[in-house]
Image (tube, rainbow, N blue to C red; front, side, top):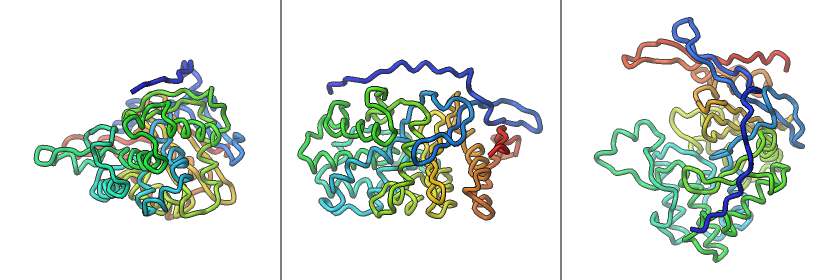
Length: 342
């Protein structure tokens, strides 16, 4: 594979990070997580920010709802008879449960390819319940949390008659289309987006926090449609993550008004559709994703995006309980930021 990466200087200035979450053992603080938050409107204008809105972050899996756009524009749904659930899986970082693997396999079957064409690699499934069956049932490439994204990338290549052997090469025509789509959605020149290699071997992108938030605001601002990534995710929340996962719980609580997507290394992106269209990005400086749920729930409450019973649906994530190896409660994680200024 010929790899030409677009590397940009992105030295992080973590001195600008603010305290976002505290971890308690008993009633004493054991550790803290700092980071950055930005909230923008549909035009990319910053409404609120804590820390540095210009902080460079790596989108990783948070790019998936944008990465699918060129494939949707190609008409792969009509060409291959792909169902909305199959398309939704392309936006997912899923657990690798049977619901997820069946859909990934179905996409491959419809486009005339097999698991051997998938170059995302194999990893321990994100679904905790699945990890215990490893000795009896070897892991499959379909259980890779990015399998839906890769299957749809391959579908676009088949549709356009492009080679599939090097479909992950950053210079491949499909990957170039994705890069330019990201730039357009994020209101940022292509030359200012860093391109690296993700854990699944696909290109991944680094750019300022505010531009990532702009992408999500624009996802929410798009007209409601069966083939809009926002609506695909909102209509099939379980497919986006799965059992016991924050993204699935938030989307379910939002009841069609919001979507949430984890990235990696403590990145969480949220798009809100309503009277006020919002794009929200939370980035934890030390990369620990355990801090994002309580911060996100508190922020969504302060913004009045979620209320009452919706917040009750997320109670286990608002102040996550910490258990020891004997299943005893020993602590909790809380949002440390005061959002009263909103």
